[in-house]
Image 1 (tube, rainbow, N blue to C red):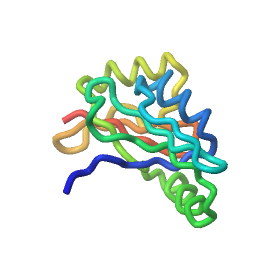
Image 2: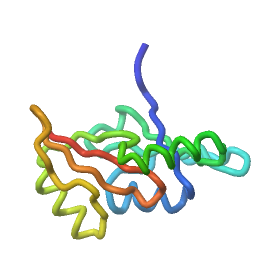
Image 3: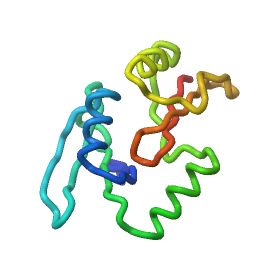
Image 4: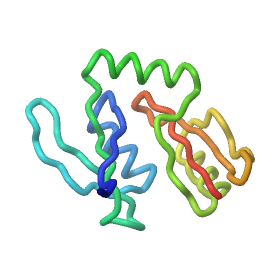
Length: 127
């Protein structure tokens, strides 16, 4: 058994694609029409055959409630590893990314949390 796909809930797939590619630096991997939405995935340029991130349309009322509750409680939906959190924090800030938590030591890791413009808090971390 392997993990090959994970997803983030997004309010607008096109907006999410722009943010996750143009700002975060991921690469679009799959874009297939799927009814009113798309099967739309991105991957890290450092591991294009690794885990795909599905930009999942958030049209389910239960999922919308879940997403909103996580955001209101300050809980990240997912986390991405980085090699140099301070450099990544500065790079993303220069691109206009809004952080709710600047780089902060958390045990053996340093974490930072930002908004992805699609209703999610995303954590980056360096161990």
